[in-house]
Image (cartoon, rainbow, N blue to C red; front, side, top):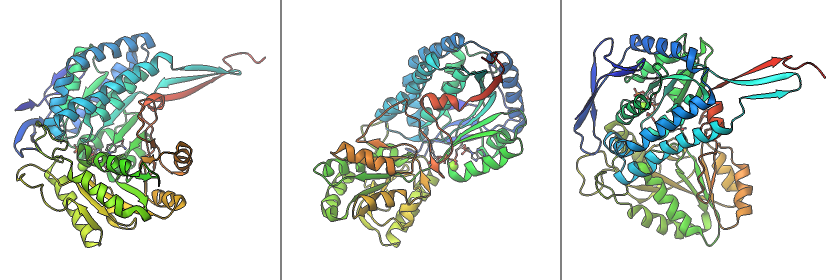
Length: 474
Ligand code: NAP
Ligand code: MG
């Protein structure tokens, strides 16, 4: 049992102003795994005041000092990486191999990237008579989701530290453990008091208090579209900068060539990774209509081959995060059946042999792009396959979405993959499975407005100042 009932404010572990706790449930066992405190606006006021005081000095720390700090954090992160992995498995149900692999690797990668970027980033540049300076924006509120907890926390905290900002982190109630360990890591690495603060609690209380706060300069949020909209409204009165990373319904276009079967199998298994709880997941798989028979067989085999079970064991897929997420996904599978999509793998209910834990069957439909299951983000292991007539049709279907977060193009001819990629209205596209920590990540349309990862991820936390007349006119 984990008892994480203190907050990290001004360099110390402190009790909430008004004690109130909630239980955290392990999604694999449905048993209570620990307790966290639920903060109040009074805790937020304390943390914001500490962050404001710390900004007076940390905002002026030199690049060399910030690099030293990030490198000290790196050493602590590596020392506690296995603990972070175990916490992630316990809080949100990722299989141990994934939690101790990609989950913690992403956090580590964002840290290394922040260090890399900081080493060469130009904070000052003279253009004509003007000096253009990039300065830290100030006190930041960071609000994160549960689905890739270390990824989404580290992609905010480390660029913000690199920029010279101070911050208050509000972790998700469903996955609060890894954030708690991260706060310990930052403390042990010697982050100055007040630079990083963490308050656990409800988004509607702590998140809203941060968004409305007079003395918070920026909110960076990753999560669902409705909450993103609410945060923008809450932040409007104080004209805060708001960076939003929201949901998606990303298309994966498989070209009509000899590699089709391999890509369909890879995309189907890929959709089931992290139990489908990935904002940029390729949840609409677009294939040539003429080859649907072949696709049906390959995709069904790939989905049926995904092993589901205890995340501490040796399975490809664990449970989804919570009972409520399980119910939402079941509801969507029911809607797919009701609107006449063809079910080719999985379906309603838990996988055979699992009667406890929020396990979902890896599910694949063949449907059309106008169905609810093709338009709304399900956030579970549910793939919709849609046939296209030709490349123009594939691009039109891919772009016919309210979202524009990810996109995938797979095929043998790189020139065709490139041409298709240029036509997709989305923030990030992966051609034949590429990966790059320096590639900006964020959404078009309702998928958001910010860009994280790499150099633009640092830029999120900077203000731009012009000093005209810095140099005398020539
Ligand atoms: P969520 O319900 O939007 O919650 C995200 C965070 O916001 C949580 O910490 C939540 O607190 C907090 N929150 C809730 N209401 C709030 C309010 N009124 N004001 C401020 N903060 C508030 O999202 P989720 O269910 O955790 O995560 C799933 C969603 O995130 C999906 O839509 C997914 O696509 C999206 N996502 C996007 C990206 C991306 O990079 N674009 C990455 C991952 C996930 P609680 O602890 O109280 O819930
Ligand atoms: Mg939620």
